[in-house]
Length: 426
Image 1 (cartoon, rainbow, N blue to C red):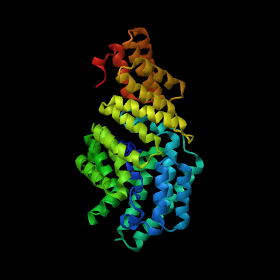
Image 2 (image 1 turned 45 degrees about the horizontal axis):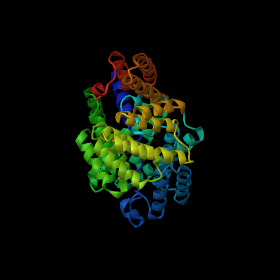
Image 3 (image 1 turned 90 degrees about the vertical axis):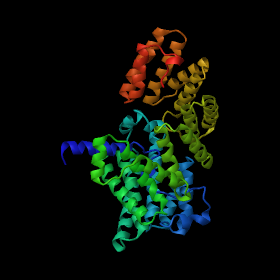
Image 4 (image 1 turned 180 degrees about the vertical axis):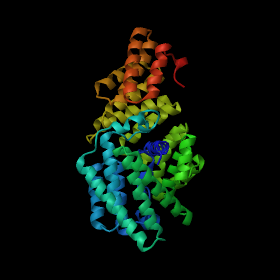
């Protein structure tokens, strides 16, 4: 492969990584907790009815941030069905979700704008979880491939193999930082699930992988799109979105498709649709406080800043009362988001308290940089230009160091021209 082709492959594979939180192409499609357990065997033909309920319970716990319970249930599934690819893939997926939670790479902000560029600098995962993930994924993949060797027309085995390769792609990109490894696995995942959809259009669950990758291809620059087409990927932004929307309406793929659409809608500026989906998902997983955080963030993007402030205040109180582990810098992130809403409401004193609170609660770097940006705005609004310039300089330095060009660009712009509500960022 030439140097140019290697570069294009790397760019494309990096794009595959950029949607780790919501681009569920990596996550095995599994029964939604919304569905009735009596439907399990009908909506998930690749999982025997005897284990479908336990798989359902494991993912329900994981998406409610009850990670220890999810891990127990996932390991129970493996014990119940050691020869089932879906059992091992379930455990691998829940291990991956736990690793992402520990690293803090689980919010929409992590995969929008420039913040996503800093993801490969995150700490290594715990060695025991990493080893267990790789072991379970190897088993899931080998079991599915063995069934395909016995019967190449087995669509359930084809689906299981594709889901395993998709999970491998996202882990390689989001945890290992190996974009080339992600590329190869993603291609195998796409081909497998495209075949499932072609041969059985009713298998809309396969549309999560196909729709996600089609969208990712479509948003790349022309040289990278051409490379992706030659490598065997299909494109089409609207086609990708429609496949995900169809999958989202099916109980078997509801959660995976919904969270993928949240990120896509956010990237496309369809913030009202993203907020609507987040409210639905949050209602299905009431113990997941981070979904409330995302609701508040989406409300800010929509322009419903009063609703955002109320949602974030409620969510922050619930987070403070929640004894379960937090993502790194979580309280600082809550305060930052609420401070942004309060500034938009022109509640300057409350916003100032929140932004100083951000700096007092060990924020991750990109949040710290953006907090200084907001403090600069507040200083400008109060007429203290020297303090504003100092905050903008700090924001620019931190944001550049943490690979957040959007924040760095805003900081430079406000150094040149004071912030005002008339001149705020579009």
